[in-house]
Length: 432
Image 1 (cartoon, one colour):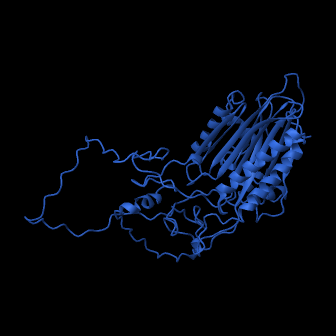
Image 2 (tube, one colour; image 1 turned 120 degrees about the horizontal axis):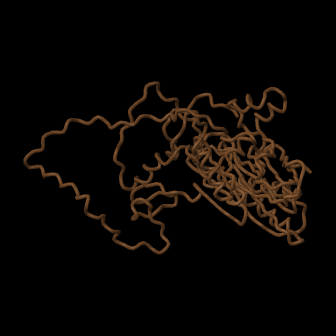
Image 3 (cartoon, one colour; image 1 turned 120 degrees about the vertical axis):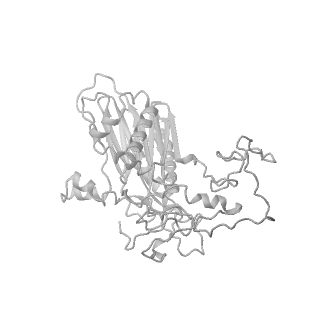
């Protein structure tokens, strides 16, 4: 990933007033080209805090709603925020005898006045003041409070498969997405699907890209598997369908402003990883650096990572230029070399088929989780022992592990139990 020659030292985006982090190349919320902003003076001016007009309350609250995502990989560091201080004020003069006495402070025990009119049925009210309506941007028109977004934290349990996705502690929105489904093969046996996608933060509208990819891949699998398509071929076709869905977003400018020259617009992009459990097979497919892990129920057997990253670090290891520890310690480690999107290189979906001979758990996750449990052994160590019986609880625990570790990125994980009759023997997970 190219580095910006001049680091941003602004506290908020000039275009949308979202907070910025030091080193941001573009605003993670609106795509404003920060390289066009003049370099600030060396001194740090004090920014006056003014009381906003009622009509600007909501926009004023936006500046503190959260931090934007990192560009391609997580780097701990300072926020680059200016320190806010109250402006200097002239000494107050002694009020004259003619000046009216100040109004008494309201009694805090007096209940707040109810809204004078009843909002129409279905109107979303603010979770803070319970009186103001929520605007289309997710802020209260009365008090300016940012409302919790549905996508900030998502959970789903579908039979034996479950997934949890969370915004994390550093990003201002959740750019991950997932899809779970079950269907039946032509012989009536079940097939379970989990798709996890991670939006590329340096691209425009990464949240839309991940949602489109997860939905398209899931729908493709639900069409092909019941027709009898082999699960590995079905996974390949699903990734192609997801790529087409993401690429089509580039044809729609979305909410881009034609007359805003500093709004950076590039092709939406995301990564994808998926797993299908069907007919005694475990099929995985991926593009990017999201991963699948295999964790045996019998923890005396070794766990395994079933995917290989499309990333700078993986290339360095494959070329023999660095060992894995050195490569993933480098700040370039998370620069991806494969993704879905109109500006991606030639699409090369990766697929693999395994036939486990013993029961275990399939962990499908974004790097927001595996950053805190990178090796297969580390991942197995944090997976709860009863996760195959309580997959939703297990996914919640794993997301909590990432948040406890710092939550630098969005984090998404899906868990699929894989049951095998106990008489099986041999290797834990063999490639077919």
